[in-house]
Amino acid sequence: MFRTPAAELFRRAAARGWTVDASHPEHPVIPGVSLAFTRQTSQQVPRDAEGLPLSVTSVLVGGKDHYEYRRDNR
Image (cartoon, rainbow, N blue to C red):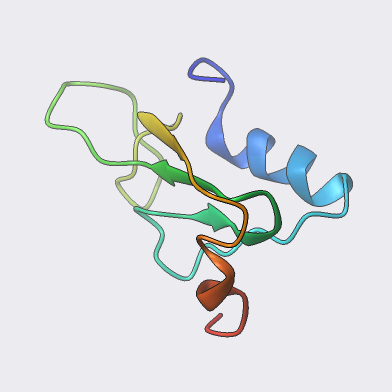
């Protein structure tokens, strides 16, 4: 996961039918499976055109409905 480019990771999630909420680009989430990602780091890593790391830097697995509030706030 940490070597897969974030854009590819989120395309794969969408292909599975999951909603990817990237309204906060540094902290995208997948509400239906309660996964949250961080794309922030102070390390020198390759970055995309928006300045975000190409890959995610951490993943949080939340409870079943942890990110449901983001489902309606896209």
